[in-house]
Image (cartoon, rainbow, N blue to C red; front, side, top):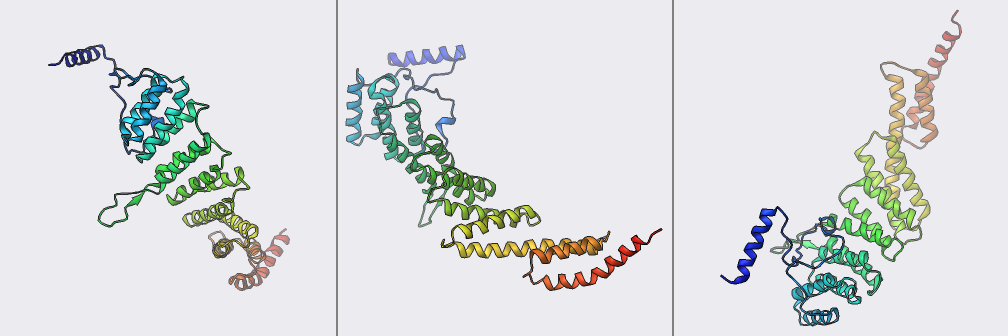
Length: 343
């Protein structure tokens, strides 16, 4: 048995006896998992790995060495060489460039989550030595790839996407640079993903945040329509909630008013008409309840029918409501006279 195998066995026994965790033996190759490394119990700052050191004695030489590996297409080894530089010489001027290129190598290999996290480490740990706007753009590009990439495309089958995996990435982009060129689009896509997942309340909040935070964005009009449509769908799930119906009505009306030339105005008007009919039905049912309920209240029914005609004069039920008003008026007057003439 070679001498270093004896040493390795002795170290293993030592750690098992002491109860201490074994240190990492070398950089772990990132996989395709969408689990963010930011959520793992990793140190805030990279440190040298145990029993592993850079191949060169200076950060400048190590950077050149890693660059040659990358040029030759030996991307796995290049990634490790860049990572070794960052860990060994974190304060050196070459460290930020190495970190940038490390993330780029992972991006080339389509290790989306790992690449995103390495770019995030660059933003969190270094303030200079790399193109800041380019990093934000690459993070957006990665998040979009995570959102749209199809998995398990076999035998001509289209496979499926997992857009929800991109949610924390877009949220991080907005947090990283809320005034950047991509921030409004990232915020819109957050709402879009929630909408696709039928998380309507989260989608409504995301689209509203876009309007409030980026009122001049080209995405605001579409976000306003999507928010109104989410409220409409939310009402379909809760057809007895008058407040939700009114909120959807209000948002659709505002969209039609603010964007009369928008291509989705016709759809918005159709949804608006449906909601008006539903709200009219609620008013009419309320009047019928007062008129025909177990504890009949002709006076309350009369007021409810009058309120219905005032709010929905064009409804098909308006004629019936008017007829009921004419029938209820003498009943209410008679009851009033009886109450008035009581001794």
